[in-house]
Image (cartoon, rainbow, N blue to C red; front, side):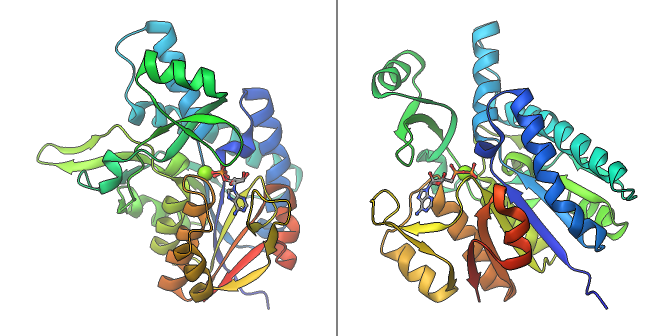
Length: 308
Ligand code: ADP
Ligand code: MG
């Protein structure tokens, strides 16, 4: 008998391209890989990133209406709708083709953060497009953005990225999962809110979807956390020509490598910290793999597997 499992599958905004046509195509391709898992009856929560998209939406408003710029929480909410629409549409169409009947729901999601999180005053989360050094300096001057080099790929705007504490819509998520909905939630890490005397209020930040995925995996008591990105493995000495892939590692060894500063903040480090958090909390496995290899990642463990 096949054991039914619960998975959180999360993938990066960078893997979705920067225009609607590319995004739709990438999602149509990606969901194919999830069909066998759905066929086997597994429950899946999908989480997606929004780094490039939230930056584009924010900038588009700023350019079109000049001031005031829309808050990042509103830009994040729009990215959940924009990406969620493509995601649910692609998934529904793939289910029809495979003659499978499962409801698909995109859940707009607010994630509670702590306004006193030290990350609020130390921007680390890259959003929007990549720029060269000169363009980056102009943006710093003209728009008062903080710009930072992003893993050898160019300069990007960075914003505050506090840690997720809880999901406001968690009861809705659990109800949907109990009814075997395929749920897309926590998009872009969730809309960041703080709990005040006046209720939940959006704040100027973008949560890393890697941490939101770990939090959601914890909430639904997932059997595995699968983080898909645009690279096949986690590497040691990533930017050197002699980089070495990590195929399988236990949480303790990986935590030691983090301590030794092997991984880049804003890109690979949040994935690794999120996996460690989930593995240590649940005693289950996490995997970091390429969206292009998702089939092999799931069936054969192609990617970096993190064991308890
Ligand atoms: P996502 O949108 O999937 O979250 P990110 O850009 O945040 O993608 O993170 C994935 C990127 O991290 C890779 O494309 C790569 O450029 C970068 N990276 C930084 N350090 C490493 C490393 N040690 N091993 C692999 N990739 C790394
Ligand atoms: Mg990322």
